[in-house]
Length: 298
Image (cartoon, rainbow, N blue to C red; front, side, top):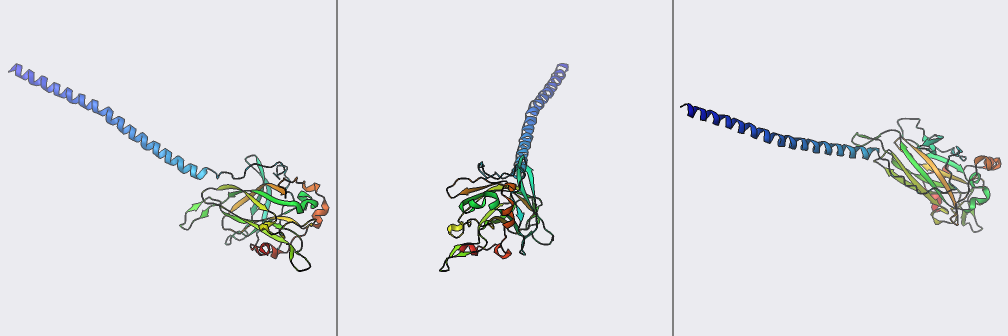
């Protein structure tokens, strides 16, 4: 009887030991699997978070290309005669300043909205061309390039009520006040237009900043009359941005004039062009500067 009891007790102890051994053998594997699943979930979550952050914070690639040695870079703090055009009823007031963006100076154009219930009006910015390249060289202009950088100041409200800090639409024209008056030959044919424009359209609904290079070729639309007149003090490069709802500043940089042979043209400092050209510069009537290309197509 004692031997049988001892045998049963030993068997019971052995079963307990086997059971404990099984539990300790399975536990680390289960724990390891759980830790691996947690790590993978954490990694996926981190990756998704990283992708979400990058889609918001990464700026749009700057599509501007190389900078010519004769480009107006505004690094010398000279605004090159830039000023707001007067007249008309659709424009908005603008504030001009030269600002440093990541070590690169640009001309900042800040539209002013006087009435919060209305959209921002049309921006009309003028550069006096004779004072930039010399009156004797104006008629030889064959191409102009301008670099734009847009930076959103406030959020855009979507149709569903959500908000996005985005550039949105950037629409306008790089235009020319070509001459003080239209010119016609003895038979009444147009030989010199007073105004012509070359429209641009850029957009970005994902980023708060974007940069583009815009090019305008003279004569505009390949119409011979749409080129700058020789020795006309009223000649001007006009940059307009159509009215819009969202609060976005745009910056101008690297304005470059090219002659009809494709060579870049040196640009004078504002004070080097002489006061006479500035005094004689005339602005076209306000009705000439509209969103219509009727004159350019004439």
